[in-house]
Structure formats: structure tokens, C-alpha cells
Image (cartoon, rainbow, N blue to C red; front, side, top):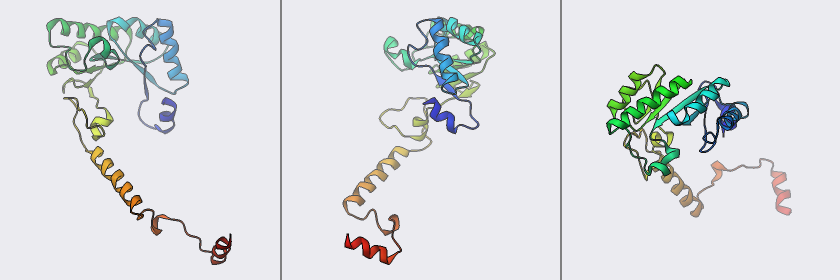
Length: 213
């Protein structure tokens, strides 16, 4: 996937999101797999989920020359452990302390930025004020240094579920659904393809010869 994106990206920074169990097992494996995303995939940095628990992996990667972004708060790869995608983190004082501890730990380990997902506005603000590296909020309020939205949510490509923090700037699922239905209808009616959307031979002699085949 990274190689495909690398071929077309001209301006943006390409960040490889490390898959589940590609970094948790050991520091050595984390560095090896992150290095593959850089060397083979063409990524310019990697992102991994985790705070204090993964700080040693982040430190090992950065010491190896690999730029790292951390991801704290709601962590999609750990949903089986937490049991939910909801913004449960940061609603108790101990949670807030842990989130700040996570943010400070990944900064100390060498992360150059941290994604903060699905925490209350005040908590996103406090985390941002507690560290010097940029915070990238996804459902973490307006006080983070940058903002993230999943493309499918932003474009309205997925309608079965929408996170509270996601804003749909378009309703492309409806447009796509309508276009597909129109295509099927026109094929069934034999109105597509028509002359406009077909190739034609201009050599009458060749046409005659084809008819004789």
C-alpha cells in the first residue's frame, strides 16, 4: 500500500501506520518492521499506537534514525482490550493523568508528534499544553496543533456509522449509490453503451469485409 501511495505523493509527508503486533513484541522487531516501511515502502515516518508502554520501542526507533508519531487516547488496534471505540478515556482524573503521562513519555522517547483521539476538549487542551511536540487531534477538540479526519467520514462514503467527532463535508455515498443504480438501469434498458460511448470503424470497405467473416 505504501509503495502505491509513494508513487503519487508529491507534497505530503507519507507516514506508515504500523500494523497490530508489528511493534509490540520487542524493540528489535519494532525497529526492523519500521525500517521496512521506510526502506521498502517509501514512508518518511511511522506511526504507532501507545504511550508509556511503547516508549521503549519509540526510543529504539528514533535512535535508529526512524521518525515516529505516537497515538494515544482511543486506540483502534486495542479495541478488543478496551471493548469500545467510544471516548471513554479522559473522563476520570486518573485517565487524564495517564494521558498526560503517555504524551510526555513519547515526547521524551523522541516522537516528533502525537495523535490524540476521542478525548474531551479540556483534556486535549491540557495534553497540548503539557508537551512541546505537536498534537494532532481526532475528536480531541480545537486546541490541538493540527486536526485529523478519516477521508471516508469527511466525504460521507460510509453511512452506517459516524463518530460524534466526524463532520461530513459531502454525501458521496448517496451520489455513488445513485450512479451505480443508473448504470445498472441503462444496461438493462440497452441504452448504455450508446453510439457516443462506442468506437466506430470509418473504413467502409473494412466494414464490408468484417460482415463477410
